Each structure stands twice: as C-alpha cells, then as structure tokens.
Image 1 (spheres, rainbow, N blue to C red):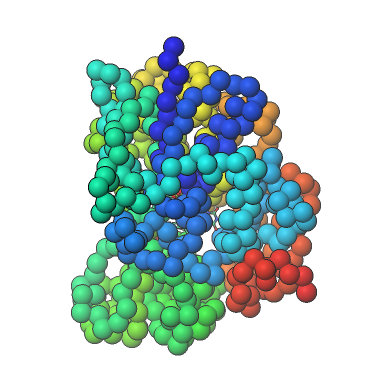
Image 2 (cartoon, rainbow, N blue to C red; image 1 turned 90 degrees about the vertical axis):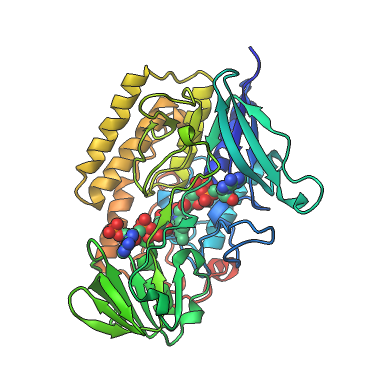
Length: 459
Ligand code: FAD
Ligand code: NA7
C-alpha cells in the first residue's frame, strides 16, 4: 500500500495537536502517514498569535486574529490543561487559574517546541481550493505562497492527498448584521473581530450588540480601561450577570437616530460607539461545495460523525476522508482538540473503525437531537464532556486518563453568576498535579498590565 498523505490546514491549537500527536506516534514506532501542514500566517498559534492588525495583512489577506490586548483566559486553565504537559511542567511552579493570553500562548508553545514541530509547518501558505476527484480517489489542494506574492510564481503546483484535515478555526470571519440608522451613526461602528485596545474607548459610551462571551468580556474590558458606560443589547436573552453600575442590559435595539439608540422596550440612550459582538461565521470558501461544512456556532455542527468525519446526507464526495478538527463551540478547548487530533490520526491509521454511513448518520443525528433538548449551560457542559470522553475512549487517549472537568466548569459558571467582576480571581485545583492554584497578586479588575512578566511576578 502506498503511504497515506494528509493535508492539514491550519497551525492553531487544533492543527498543532495533529502535528503533536503525529510526532508522538512516530516516536512510539508507529509507521505514520505524511502530514503536510499549510498555515497562512507567519507563526503558529492561530488566534493566540496576537496581531495588532485589522482588516487585511501585508499581503492583502483577511486578518485571522480576533484576540485583543489585555485578554485574559475566560475559563480556568485547569479546564484546558494537558495531562501530559501541565502548567507546572511548563512554568516549574503553580500559577493562578486565569492567565492572560501571552501566558497561555507560551504554555502551548512549550509543548510544541518539545516536539520540534515548527519545521513541520509551511508558513505563509494559504489554501485556496480543496476538491475531491472521484476517479483518482484523491483530493487536489491548491495553495498560494504569500511570500512570493507579486513576484513570478504565486500559486503553487497542485498537490494530491488521500485525506484532508481542516483545522482552520471558526472565530475569524465576523458575522456583522445591520440595523436601521447604523449607516448614519456619527461614531465608531465595529465588530469584536476588529477590537484591539480598550483604551480607545476611555470616557466613551458604548452600545454592545450581543449577549455571549465577546459581549461579556468586551463590556468588562472597556469599563476596566475607562469607558464611562456600556449598554449590552440582547436578541434572545440577557446575560443576566450582576453588573457594575456602568454596565447595563437592554432588549434588542430597533434603530439608531444620530447618536440615539432606540430599544424595543421603548427606551433610548445616547452612545459614542457601536460594537457588534454578534459572533462568527463558519467560512470555508476555499473548500468545494460538496465537501464544505455549513454550520452556525454549535456544540455539535451538523454532518460530522464523531464531530470529525464529514458525513453529509446523500452523496459524500469525501468518502469519509474529509475531516474537520476543532469545529465545535467550546467549553473544552486544548484537550478537546488534542483528543480529536489523536482520534483522526488513529482513524486514518486504521486503528479506529467506522460503521456504515447509515449508522454514522444515525449517530450524529442522535447527538444533534440531544443538543436540541439541552436546557442550560450546565447541560451544555455535560454534553461536551460526554463528547470529549467518548472520543478519548475510542482512541485510548493517554491510556484512559480522565479528562472530565465538569466540576471545574460548573464551579466556574457558578462563580460568574455570583460575581462576573471577580470570577477570574478564584483558584482551581489541577486534576493532573493535585495542586491548588495560588491567587494572583492583583484582582482581575485592577490588573491593567497583562504581560507575562507582570503576571508571573510575585508580590
Ligand atoms: P484557530 O486558533 O483559529 O487557528 C486556525 C489556524 O488556521 C490559523 O492559524 C489560521 O491562520 C489558519 N488558517 C485558516 N484558514 C487557512 C487557510 N485557508 N490556509 C492556511 N491556513 C489557514 N479559548 C480558550 O481556551 N480560552 C480562552 O480564553 C479563549 N478566548 C478566546 C477569545 C477570543 C476573542 C476568541 C475569538 C476565541 C477564544 N478562545 C479561547 C477559543 C479559541 O477558538 C481556541 O482557544 C483556539 O484558538 C482554537 O484553535 P483552532 O486551531 O481550532 O483555530
Ligand atoms: P457567540 O458565542 O457565537 O455569540 C454571538 C452572540 O451574538 C449571541 O449572543 C447572539 O445572540 C448574538 N447575535 C447574533 N446575531 C445577532 C443579531 N442579528 N442581533 C443581535 N444579536 C445577535 O460569539 P462570541 O463572539 O460571543 O464568542 C465566540 C468565541 O469568542 C467564544 O468561544 C469565546 O471564547 C470568544 P443569540 O443568543 O443567538 O440570540
């Protein structure tokens, strides 16, 4: 049998988990397939690789990054910690539970560097088109090397693969609705994807549209760095936290007249800026139609067997060879991506069998049905826990290590319900080291310096 070739798209945490697990299997003596990784940015890390840029990059490519300055982990690090590379392994000591972005990025890189993964990535190479040829039973992948843009050759020779792993992320292409009057609003209008520095909003009044993670975090951020007032407007239900006086929630706005926002409960308010925190699109224009995932942000995107193998109804152009990694909405993050990566590789290696298509579809529909009946975030957490644990069991992830961090997520959410301003000041115990995290030297709301140096400094 000819050795299998896998095209891996993206070197964010999901793609890097594929490379990590591949290297680990290789070191264990497994005859692993060839994996060719394409990453359009010049560094690994995906969203964790902060950029000041918005709009387009120096090559004219849309900016992938959606993270902003002063971003702190929005969940406890104990809920994303790798069992085989703990925070204590990386930092040599216990650190507080809610680190800023730079500290988490450094942790991720420590694990990747240990395996020497950087040289495995084709940086500045953007995937332009993925198609599947039934006759040859191969995928054709067209890429463009951005460093060669405007020079003689841009598009690279088409490469052929047996499998495609899409790990391109889904929090990069903003969903930007509009409302009457926004086109004439005399102030800044933007989406959270382009938010970078909260200081811009010092002394400003902001309308935040949306009621999920970005809305919550950017409301707190902007107040923390000096905004005078934030009004969050919700379409379905309010976030419902006990906000400080400077933040309030109102039902969805109907229109804007000059600087005056009109809400559906008949109230009005004057604001200086409008920030759409309305989420992101699953956007894969470079994947041919029959292979393309279509989904909203969901804990179980449709047509993915085990959340990974693209299994649409009817004709399947990928023949179980088109795989998506990390497409789920996320409570679990790093460990979930890691489990998906190992599952996908073991599947390609023939170590995990899949049933016939009818059974695969019944399975994925079963998960989707269960999700529909999920009543609240606690049920959602249980849902994702079961999803992760099932995959982990299938692929015997780290010989059966227990990845269940339900209790940590429950406590975290409860803490938020008690006080959204201080939930990041809490401490959690690592499931893998047994160590309880120290409390940070400054409270989240008073910690204005998010550098690694400041975070790691003990008072
Ligand atoms: P990404 O990190 O998005 O990486 C995808 C990679 O694919 C990128 O490097 C991109 O350049 C590359 N790529 C895309 N298209 C192509 C192409 N056509 N060709 C070549 N390369 C391509 N998670 C947490 O655990 N904790 C947090 O506190 C947290 N905060 C967040 C805050 C924000 C504002 C956002 C948006 C997300 C946050 N997340 C957080 C979730 C985050 O999605 C995951 O942690 C993680 O980054 C997902 O990894 P990924 O590899 O799937 O996707
Ligand atoms: P999410 O979690 O997808 O949330 C999007 C929010 O935007 C959600 O509250 C939606 O309300 C709201 N929304 C969407 N469309 C509209 C319109 N047209 N009008 C008003 N409100 C709307 O995205 P986030 O950016 O918050 O989070 C994504 C990731 O980034 C997350 O993993 C974090 O870690 C960081 P709905 O509830 O659907 O009515």
